[in-house]
Image (cartoon, rainbow, N blue to C red; front, side, top):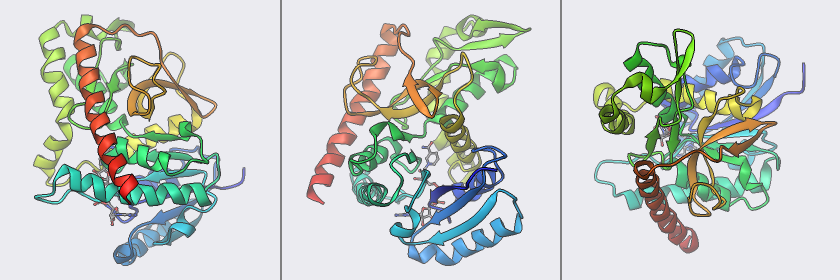
Amino acid sequence: MCDPINVLVTGAAGQIAYSLLYGIAKGDVFGKDQPLVLKLLDITPMMGVLQGVVMELQDCALPLLKEVIATDKEEVAFKDLDVAILVGSMPRREGMERKDLLKANVKIFKSQGAALDKYAKKTVKVVVVGNPANTNCLTALLSAPSIPKENFTCLTRLDHNRAKAQIALRLKVTSDDVKNVIIWGNHSSTQYPDVSHAVVKLQGKEVCVSEAVKDDNWLKGDFISTVQQRGAAVIAARKLSSAMSAAKAICDHTRDLWSGTPEGEYVSMGVYSGGNSYGVPDGLLYSFPVTIQNKTWKIVEGLKIDDFSRGKMDATAKELQEEKDMASEFLSSE
Ligand code: NAI
């Protein structure tokens, strides 16, 4: 057995964390031989609820879980971290403008970025989930100048999994038969779910998704809008936002960051754009197809982009640029 790693989950008293913590603590993410110390951060009024979560984690009697530390203090939560999964954020309340939501979250992620900078290991891997995930991730990254930008990623894996699942349902296969779908851009309704390069295993043979589906109208129409609107559809049905599927996607994302992607397969992740890939401007936190090796992601280059895709990729980049500009305004006035 190796030394335990320190893993933080913020928003730990919330509904995603409730589905997520068990998966992490039982070894689904960092492996069955990797012991861990779980740090749980939430806001002061949630400390009572959080104690209940701690009790349940203890009652799971999990061999890999060496210690659980529940706190409302950033200096305790962020100390010596190997991994930070930032789920907690300010939710959108009725009547709240997008701008107000962004402002409240800039404050949270600026503070948590600064805490990462000050207390975490410089090798820390940061996964941002709380919405608006891309811009919150960018805010944290810009507030932690001593940590490499590459260490920050945001979650678009839920959208990626939703896209795989829609194709699998349509072709009556299971999701593991579908690979190399791509989510481009923002984790919002402007995201572009793209299957132009995706393949599916049918009767033991790999074929292009477009050839297997044989319905371009659906692939360019209802398929895209179903994936883009899936979060809203879950809220409408469940009266609560996605939690089980979000937790599963966080496990998938973080496991791949930790252990790498399978040969020949890529996944979607929000990462810092250096300005050299697919015409996406420098300095945006944009979802790209990536492969991962040795805990380092690399954007998959050289995929052919047609005019249809170009338009959609630019539209979501434009929204991210607007969010970035708004966040910069708040960052400088804080
Ligand atoms: P929730 O409301 O059940 O839980 C959020 C928790 O965060 C609460 O316990 C709250 O007290 C805590 N929190 C608020 N401010 C905090 C702070 N400054 N520090 C630490 N904790 C804080 O929400 P849920 O359903 O767990 O969702 C969490 C976030 O994840 C939301 O922003 C949601 O929109 C986002 N989300 C993102 C997805 C993605 O694919 N990127 C998918 C699904 C949800």
